[in-house]
Length: 153
Image (cartoon, rainbow, N blue to C red; front, side):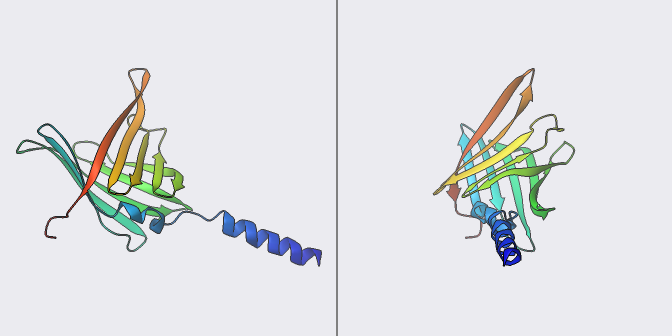
C-alpha cells in the first residue's frame, strides 16, 4: 500500500513539474511591428511545427535596412532554447528561465549583451526586451510591438 502511495505521489509531482514545450510559446505566432519616427522593427514568428518556432526580423530606417535577425526557438534538454542569429554578430543561444502564460524569459549569462531576452503578450500587444550589463550598469531596452497583418494576408 505504501509503495502505491509513493508511486502515485511521484506521478503527481512529475506531471506538475512538466518541462516547457514549444507550444507553450505558440502565442508569439504572427507578425509584430514597432515604430519610432522613421525607424520600424518587424518580427514574423512562424507557428510551432517540428518542435521549433522560427522568426525573421528586420529593422529599417526610412527605406534602408539597418539590421536583421533570424531566431529559432527549440526544445532542448527539458528547456526552450532561443538561438539568435543577428546580422553582423556571432550567433548566441539563451535558455528559458521562465515560461509562463504569455510570458517567456531566456538567459545566457556568458553572453556580453544582452544576457536576457524576454517577451510578454497582452492581447494584440507584445513587449519584447533585451537586458544585460553595459558600461558597468544593467541596461534594458524594450520594444512595444503591436500585431499587424502578415505580408500576403
